[in-house]
Length: 256
Image (cartoon, rainbow, N blue to C red; front, top):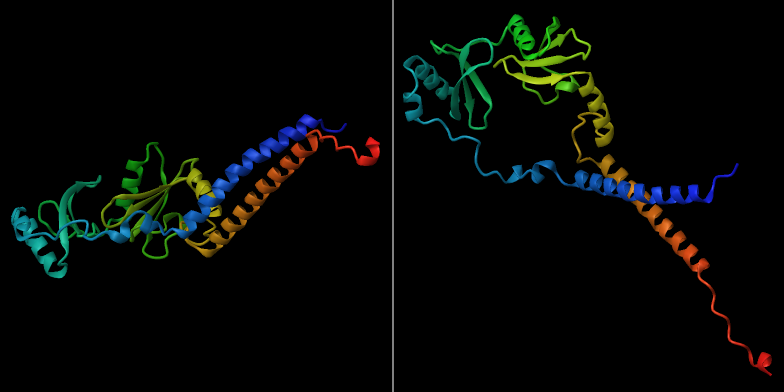
């Protein structure tokens, strides 16, 4: 049984609708590939650091033991900017950061003595505290270099804590501060895989500004654009064929 004419008609109009959206997606992909993201965010035009350097008055306002340690740190790090009292689940501690907000040191809340990086047991406790369900930790791994792709660009050193749960969660704990730096699970990994296919960045996965994506975006624009042009040309041809032809004027021989 042959398809009805209405089926062809529906297919053609659906094709037109989808082609318009595909063209919009393709143009968007091209724009993303040629506009550097740091320029879009305005990061290239930032004229000052995130914080101003710590002054003598700020150091003097700290408790004596803490102020002495911060003053010593300033001799090694002239760009110290902030100090805050944090309790991330292991008790209070002072976190010192520079003008760009980067971590410099973690100090004991009372004595001001520098604290070493977290132990594996502390990282495990923080991960279990952060996870909403009652589970056990399957493994705790200290990552000092070459992090896995799911923790790309994350702060190092860090602990990767794998939990016993159907979602296959893995939490990354900043070994210097105890901050939960990233939360990963099975859904995230599926999303990340298709994100890689979308950006066509098969290494870092987050880079839009590369030649491969630009080339395929241009090809997709050409394909969608030519398809729309052909659709319009065929539609115009059909309209012309359906228009009634005007009768030709009679020749002189026919009038005699």
